[in-house]
Length: 320
Image 1 (cartoon, rainbow, N blue to C red):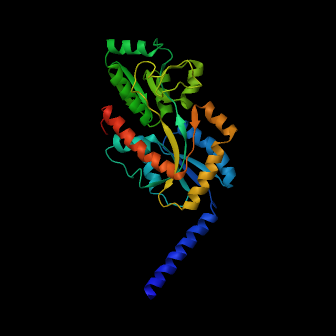
Image 2: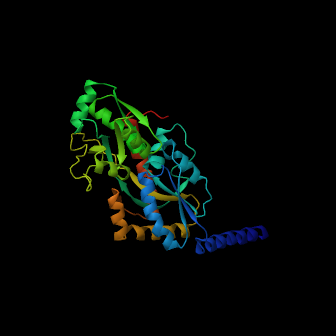
Image 3: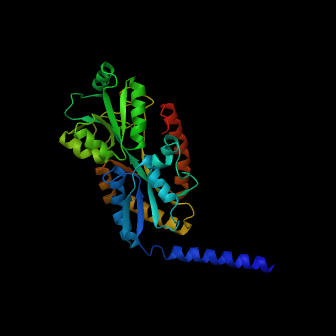
């Protein structure tokens, strides 16, 4: 009985300590880790959210980019961070849904090692071509690729680009050389420099170059056209009926983070994403905000892992 009493007292003390920590949260700066480089779509939307989140929590929010390995470098870092609410993860389909299949090994379990905070929204992915090249449409590009097999290459900086490229080659029946990058802005730089002719890019890093004509968007991987580029067709409209790559973003914390902390963050981020001014900022970079409860996000992550695993295998992509 004495041993049981000691165990009970110790357990109560631990719960009291966690509750006290959660009530005092946050009392130091918070880091949000991004799985891609500076200027990437995820970096941009995280900074848009981080500024009002810092105000709401009365703490500095540090956005830290850790690109590489299809998001697995960032995923591994956050998965092994102290679960106290001071290291958060603005994850996407890359580290959470695709990296487990695209990489031979990763240093985390995308389901067991994280707890959801809230979904944040969805990206639009575009196939774009160097504006100096003559291809004005996907049919023109496909015709050239068929006449010159293996002479065209495309860049990707995330798993949405990797999968989109593989599905495009499969659907069109063409040979393209894949050139992977750690982050999309690097791939765009090489298109602008003439090193590669094509890139699959999310809208945020692509939009400034679409506006100048340096990049020409040819098609969207989503089922609906982008409101920012209403004249650009979707692959589905071009006849690729099974072509849908819907990239998403969501905020997670390491598993074991106190529920009170998770709930506080969920409430604050959802409030921010419902703010018309924040919605407008996100819309200007082609990001569609959406939110969820922590439980809804955890369930969503499981479904997306199954979906992307199947999509990658159906596209014939081999792990690296």
